[in-house]
Image (tube, rainbow, N blue to C red):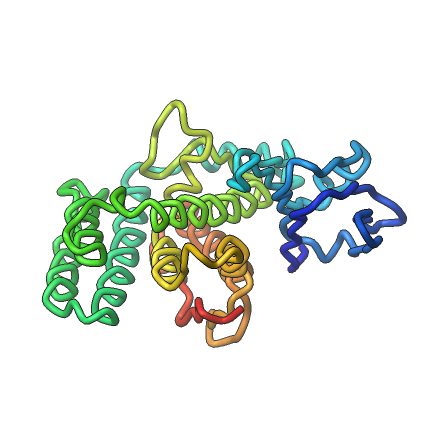
Length: 292
């Protein structure tokens, strides 16, 4: 699999030639397709060939399209991301509810732990302690909704008691960053041969990405942290959010990038679900979101 996130944000024509992505703009650039993890089309003035799209799908490259405001609006995924998708579908359908509830408990525990750490870093020690109390109260399937209670404390703290909808720029950063993060998880789910529609906890019939919404929860705080550092006057704020996927990460004691860590974490969750063993789940030990 590739490791590069390629962003095209100006008028250009993209085509495929000799296993390279050719970007024809003011200057012609070429990128080896096997090196590409994600292609983000941020401008509506970009045209692509069908041959290129087919090759990108064959290589499990995630393609994200943005609207006229440069906000992610859709994505392109291959029908089949693995050679044994039929087997994976059967596994997914047969995941035990008891196991899914236990996995969800672990995921939510990690999410609240990251929120608590963020609050502590911002100086909200009392609120951080409260979130740590919530972690000990989480039950399988989070039936008492500790996640919801934690979210209320968390966002009220970082926004001074107001709803996160009150800060238009901050909210726009969150939406954009979450969309990029969601796409990264969709890619890994599809590449592993599973369906994005069938979630562990999320079960919205109108949401095509229920499983990705489940898996990304512990990583949302990365977007929150980065968004708080961004300025509305910075015209590069979207690039900085996209750069999160390439930030330095420590996973299993080794230095890597966030997109690779997401791949390893996602596969560990699938192992846990298939083997009914939540101890299989691994999270990054350290992420450096300010690295670009």
